[in-house]
Length: 95
Image 1: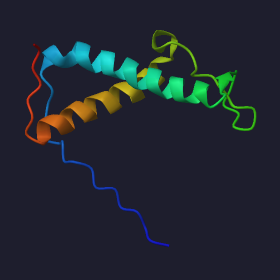
Image 2 (image 1 turned 180 degrees about the vertical axis):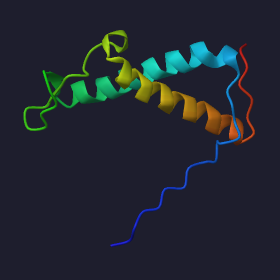
Image 3 (image 1 turned 45 degrees about the vertical axis):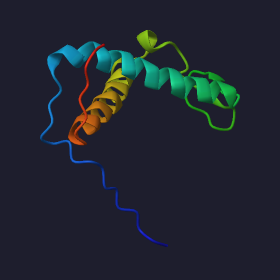
Image 4 (image 1 turned 90 degrees about the vertical axis):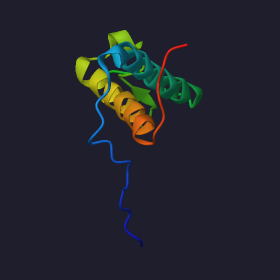
């Protein structure tokens, strides 16, 4: 079996402009909503703890009801995605 070695885009030199903070938050909410939408389509429901056999998960709630620790994960995903876009040489600007 071959060992997988992740090779993400180097974003260590990228810092997001402060005006993108609302974008990060909205993307974090979007990431959560897409995840939840997929789980619900697969038959998952809200449960007190994650249970793969019963397809229950405690995070099947609106983003604003998530514990802060879960929001941090989604924000990190959004932040790293935006940083990767910038690291690839793209600009992010509002119309």
